[in-house]
Image (cartoon, rainbow over all chains, first blue to last red; front, side, top):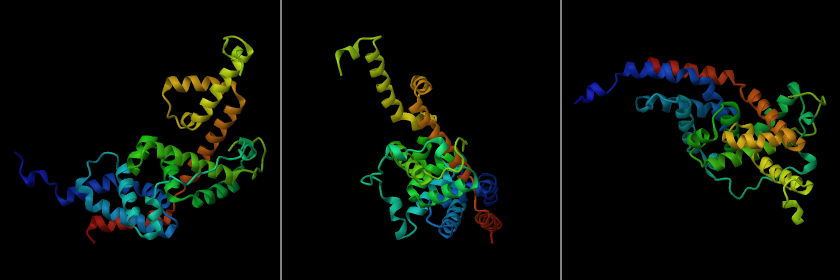
Length: 186
Length: 95
């Protein structure tokens, strides 16, 4: 049987694992912290607190899926952050996102192109509630599957799908009617 | 809807079948675009997408929006990353 000392890895080994597995994910951490926050200042605090927690817990990390692990830590940290983040805890049941009316459903040609479109979309993303924005970020930007997003956020897959649908509906509404160049693709 | 709509091969039957597929496809377009459907179901609905302008436009809107979100969402606050890199360095060096 292995002794406790044989099982436990040295501090140096843990630092090496942290450098190898977690440090390369700083851009990812910055993005998801922003998606879970109301402002960049709040995102900075969340990202740094998440990083410190990850460092302290690296010994318990099995080394698989660093992004999923970081996302879970960040989510739990966001939930415990402060009163403003109580909305992150709330289920979205009861908040009905109206379907776009037929005349406001966006055509591909009806979405503005180029830098102005990016700025409009950036602002619309910032206007989303964090619990919607993080689902969009994980699925559309970080390429997680519905199931992976559901697992790291600890919500049902159906909630991932409904938040994604409602978030996209809001974004489409924000982008509609701003066409600069009919017929141009995004 | 008249009973003729249930007689295979009639115009009414084709219209009813098209309308059913439209509803089914519209309901699942998000999953199709996100690649979240089983291959067999996706194949059935994609065949309808190819033949139905309304559903194809809806799919294209979501696809375009998804691409735009991916582009905008990849933008990362570089100051935030630098601060994280500094913090990671301090943590690793035991400061």
